[in-house]
Image (cartoon, rainbow, N blue to C red; front, side, top):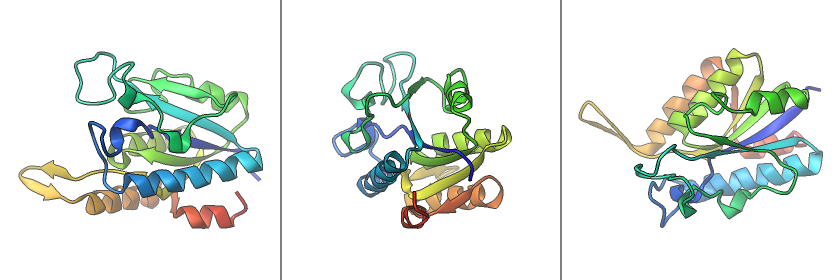
Length: 184
């Protein structure tokens, strides 16, 4: 069996009701991520938390040092769990994420978090490109409506499109319940 890590990406306060950039279905996604987190801890898997803060305070959300940039209590880290701080979309870019994974001889990543159409997409593709096997818990990830070229795209369609693309060539994309039934 491959040595695996659960990666909890950007489940931060600004994405929840009352925050500055609320995502669709965030409470359910965070609850599922919390269930996966509990299972990973019980099985002894490495848990890595990713926390995004933009480099300056002139941003619409996840401002440095703000309450909105703090990790949400549903998935709060425990002592000893690595927290990777990032300022870019890709959690591998200019961070210690790969070094942490290599230190623990990790081969398989299980991904949860936000936002499906940006940071989840980026970490999954980057991980696959550097030869990790990847599983995405699609119902433990969240996004929001998008606009493109005058077209409104509802969050459910954004989520489905990005998960379909990841499932096509980058990762196994499953619901949290299936992950939990695997004994993890």
